[in-house]
Image (cartoon, rainbow, N blue to C red; front, side):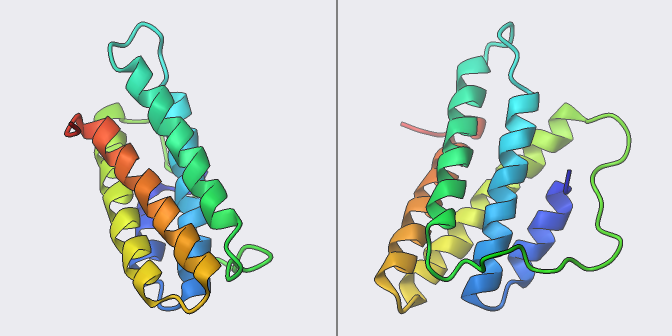
Length: 142
């Protein structure tokens, strides 16, 4: 699995719409896998994790249908790999919160600049799902 640090770096460095969309697609995928791994029916936050995972899947799908998403994943720099060792739940969730906030910002910015209406809609929709993930993980919603 790609690490949250890797997707954060890719989202931060993305300098063109196709690159950002590719990074956002991967970020939503990583969030989905992480959130599903933390779903525990015995946890008081189970419903929040399930809902956030659903938002990650929906955000990924919103990006998937944008016309500017490259037809295949863009090449990755050598040496990118997943996290080493057992997961640290607290650090992973904090990183997931940070990634969701970054996704919202970057996709919202790109929605304002995208020339294609379908790209604008996809970016706005994905940004809303990223915001919902953030709210669900932080408990900062209404």
